[in-house]
Image (cartoon, rainbow, N blue to C red):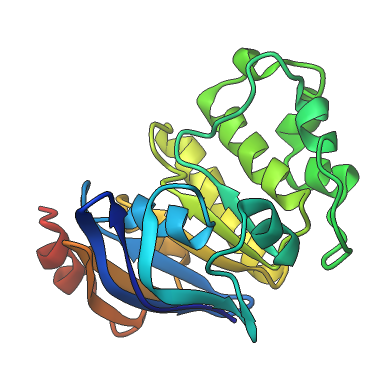
Length: 232
């Protein structure tokens, strides 16, 4: 279990997270929803141990292992991978170069280049294309595939549907469902309410750096969530 306990974090003297607690179980999609500026990306960065924000209290655990204070590469080795907001693929590297730059520290799910290509047939077709030659949807597939090559047990996906055409959003939902079926825990950070609800097992809503709603998908009716999110 990936477990966030009473996490406080911010940038300099600006506090952004005010006691965030949530868990992601293996084989579970936990959707974290919220409008822009509510602290969602700050939480993801804090969970991955990135230099900013600064964690002032609380902790992140993977099972019995405390991740708070570890460098990002050690968190990745422990079994947590990140699909960052904006994809962040390298413009000059080919699809194959992206997928072969990482060597898993240990085999968990056995993700290989062949398995990634099977999961994303479009990447197989574009294997020799550079990052700047891919569409937005293809770059998102590549960002997910690159994360999987670290052979994680949990994957954090920050705004994966951002900027994608509806047909690609639907394809992405299929990818998230595949990861859940493979036994990965997924923290899906989204503004796209309906896409998140299509795959979520559990839903949390963040507002002003705190969790204002946390429940199973069954106990998170769309009408309630639209009121939290201001969606009409």
